[in-house]
Image 1 (cartoon, chains in turn yellow, purple):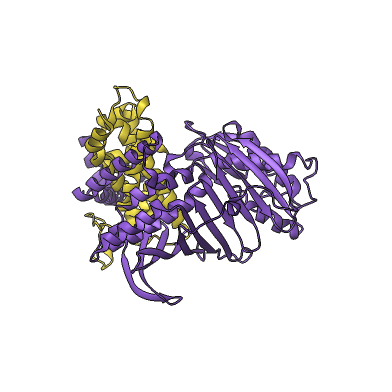
Image 2: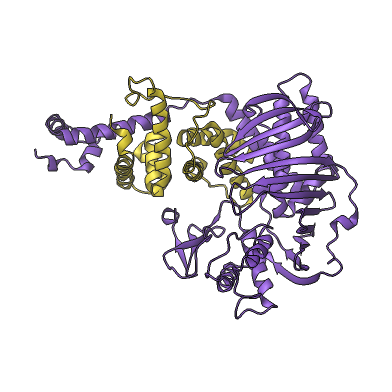
Length: 172
Length: 441
């Protein structure tokens, strides 16, 4: 496979995963570029047996979380501005009848993204792949190279930790 | 069922739909009775609903296409540059690329021009103006401009630096009070001179085998910024600066707000203003842009001027290691009255900061105890070269205002190339391997 084919075939996957984690189209594009450029720099060293879907999932999640972490550190000195370019999604069950319901849903997603960036890597992987990417446990186990029970343990711990960390925002 | 029968773990299984059916009813019954658990379950459900909202992000075909295109363009440009087949027009970028210290500045200028030019694309006949500006940057034989940085920190006043590039691979920065650094790119690195006017000292330095970091390639920045026009969010209209009517554009990228002012007649970038959300109160104004001004060889001379005493330092960047950096930190903390570590560990500012600290009596003597006049500059230079060779984003310095001694206070951490773990240096100069999860916050 040529590098160009790789980008064309997997670009959607990489950009989509990054956008779902980062909630920001610009940052997702940054992650997309950084992931592919890193692959390109090592292109000569890959043999023909790379499972690109798995490899790029892991690389994208790692890169997106790294970017999220950088963003968290900048959030510490200022409130993250609600960009006008950002999609605002109101997930069912989180939006309230208050007029600022949509904003709160968006803010909660930002907080969740930030909290994900602070989780141990395996837990963050399991949560993102299961709940944002909607993959089956068996698929996640294959991607992460571990057993299905292990995936479930990571996922459960992630859910508990996130709920604990976001406790004050989750009370309806 | 008592409240304690329903553990957090079981609640998680319940909301994830993993509870066996015979147990589901039992838990549901308990939740009806127990407000504590009911609220806990609701919180978990809210969390999952929030994640569901994140998973439902719609994809935009045009964004995907432009992201893919950018990656391919960036790789092609880098490939051509590597093989040295880019035309003369790219020479300017290539020579600058050889030295990392200059990279940020060129990347900034190219980026500014690209943002400015691209925002013009939305207007009439603007592609011509845009093309002219990018051409100017790519084809320039010389480029000069001034940067005025307001730090927003009381002890670090406003600094003006005049920057000059020449496509022979020369770079010069000068402050009005005479701190001058001139760099000349060599086959694998850079050599140059730094003048310290107060003491009439100068440092003559050379660095070989500087690693090439494609991420810092200014052309990558240009290619990335090709996708920016939609983000040059605001047209500011016309305003007069020093008798010239200029057109203003504003763009926000990550944490940096950029305003550029362009002469509509010539399409030339005249003034740029940068503000950084991460550093409130700090801003940079780039001004006095001149393309192709004749700059004499003597302007870029790396010979020590008359009356200056040279100190020579040299390092092979590929031979510099962590121990050199630690030695530098140890030296500096031996040197300061309060055993503190340096305020910064990279950049050309450090000489000026050291002179300033000397004036304020923050050093014990002209040289750190136990370090001679010969060894000291070498150690400092090798230490600074070490941070200079680390790729951006793979290290962090936190030793400002920290004194030597406390084994629990991390002052520097970095990720060696290819290593899954990070190396963390503590204030007692002990080093530990740390997983990314356990890095200092």
